[in-house]
Length: 267
Image 1: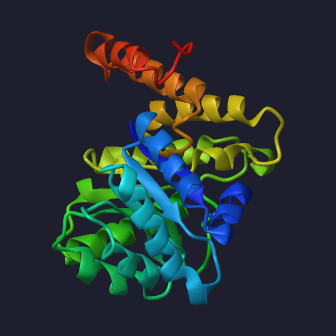
Image 2: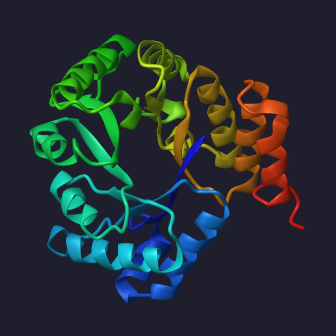
């Protein structure tokens, strides 16, 4: 599983306060503990006013890179901010994100095509969030047609099928499961990602719901996720599920992660 650490995000109240107070140690610690917990990428999202977003992204990225070599996921709803933020990174990471809204593809793909950056892509377009699996897969096919135009290999994509609140869903996660499994059938080397915690908004004991969703989504083909890597129970569930799916030969990754303290009782 590719783990995109979600904790450096200005939409989280404690992070917003740290950004406002320029609390560098708080940000450095978030980067450090996520790396130690096994994050593949450290997501960096400022979530501040447009006029200070880019300078805030640079500040955050610099702090992260002071304490870890883990690649960064530059994260903003403004694709131009992400493109500029890439310049602050010491190595290729994850561009988070594009979609078929507006001119995002036209702005991003020419810049990113000949790099080693990976790309998160949302399955929505100018009509909004599709309400059926068929419509989301139609957006996906249009997205991949654009990727082919720019010669971007499918293996560089992390497709977000758009995980929404379970408590307002009419069919649980059946639609998301269908979208994930169909994407993986069509493009076996592509990654499927998503913000795991979206599923549990407005529900009690959210961490339990997140764990259950992750297991079901991994069975459908989810192999990348935006989540809190310091949640040991969730990380343990991920490693155990990989064993159950036959993706961890002789459970060696599971055993290694346990010995490193990524999950289980603190030693």
